[in-house]
Amino acid sequence: MGRVFDQMKAFFDADDWKYEEMEGRPVLRMGFSGDDGQWRCFAQAREEQQQVVFYSVASVQAPEDRRAAMAEFITRANYGMIIGNFEMDFSDGEIRYKTSFDTEGTDLTNGIMKQLVYANVLTMDRYLKGIMAVAFGGREAIEAVAAVEG
Image 1 (tube, rainbow, N blue to C red):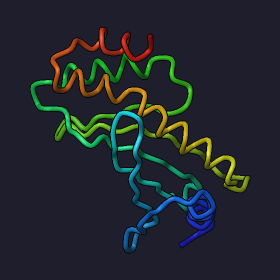
Image 2 (image 1 turned 30 degrees about the horizontal axis):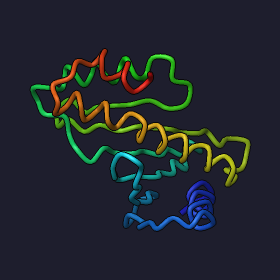
Image 3 (image 1 turned 180 degrees about the horizontal axis):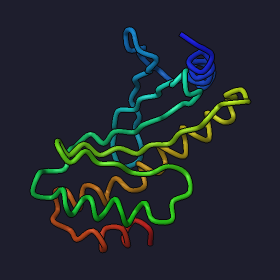
């Protein structure tokens, strides 16, 4: 499909990830199991922009009545993050963590992909308890972030 997609796939093959190619799109779909749960992941090659994007998508959606609290949690969690950020779709409550890399002028090496992917899944795993506490436990965002970050 393109240089970025091929280099992206090479990493997942070398790192022994099981994935599916999404038909007609430069996207790989896979699952991940962390210490605190399981979720879906997507790796997307943006060939024209020479970028790769990796998403961890929480296995739950924030209920409508908890989305404002979740937005606060995400904002507090994102503050000071260097690599990546949390996002939430207000229309359906989907919560995801995104990392990305601009490959212009360089090759997308396995080392770069490893940093991109593992920084992502480890961050999602770290914050997942807080996400669940805010979405379903009625916990205040400030308390949940403090508990996650210690």
